[in-house]
Image (tube, rainbow, N blue to C red; front, side):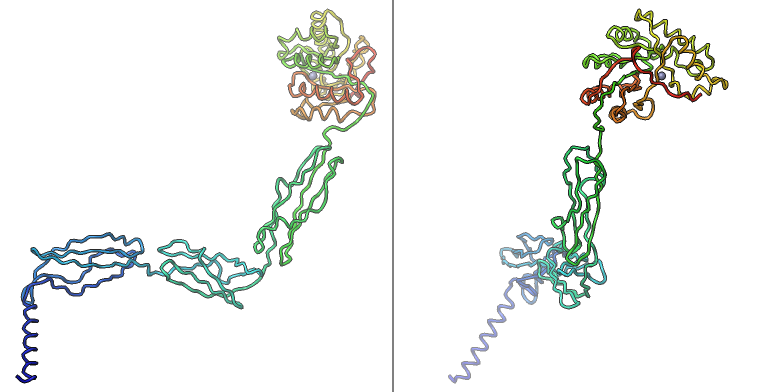
Length: 468
Ligand code: ZN
């Protein structure tokens, strides 16, 4: 046989075998891809092309059993296995599904022109966000060249965004100093001044607290107002200052005297008189009580007795303490005075001739009730003629209206002390905050050379000028 003939027969055989395959039923697969790409937010849809079972004349649907796991919300490569079945024939297809993030991150900038500090710190707020990765601000990369800045950011799937902007380089903003503690501080003389300091923050240079210069000083042993100035500059020379005032105050004037202090208490007795008597007893100090007989003193008569028994002087203030009554006529005044006088004598068994006019002999309130008779001038003479001795005061504690603060009452009394030989202090034992100041006053007086006494016949008169 010729070689050409053999070749011809061979080709024919190949064609016949090929055609047998076409006619022989099998899984027919079209457009199948071993690898498929998806966007991360896409929905998964099976994609293995067109498949049927049969030959070129007839092709039937096949059953596909799908195995594997895919989560399109997460970037990654997922492997799927598809088993094709038809009657007793089967075939396995493998497929890789690659879930990708194909969206670029976005960059947002607050300002149109970006300001850069001389030290390269970018002042404008630049943010980066990626649909898939979220906030990418920390992954931002910047590069400044001349008056241009290149800002770039890349997400985890290598999608990159690059923008270019104009920049200005300057620092014209001064640091901000904040004081620790208040701008005005008060310390008592003799206590320690501890510098509370300040903090400083600069837009370009950050924390400048360490560079704050503290100018000025406080002498805590000398009263007065002191100014401390805090100064700081940033590297560009922008300066900031802030000041604080420190008041060094003298709570109690340190006065050493030799005078006698007569503590006197009006308007009682009352709910705090017992406590007061206990304090006086503790220091063995005698005082003077100008008592009344008003509704508020009811139930405390025994304290008049106790005060008297303990050596205090009981003086007369008023039965009613009713200005409109006692100052409307001299008769009413003496009716009222005699009533409290008899009561005191009944309680204590002792006579007393010491009196204190309600409102003091210098009061002007009596003008409201005396029909122009200048009753205080009359009463001043009349009581003296009748053998009474009236006492006003030369130290006002302020407890009758100026203050309700114990410290202030004590301070008012103490800071009124000086070189005089006689001090008559006006307080009210129906006021707790005033009674509470007594111990401080006593301690101060005793430690500064003063003596405490009750009013007696030998007490110098302390009387005001009449104002009515
Ligand atoms: Zn009074």
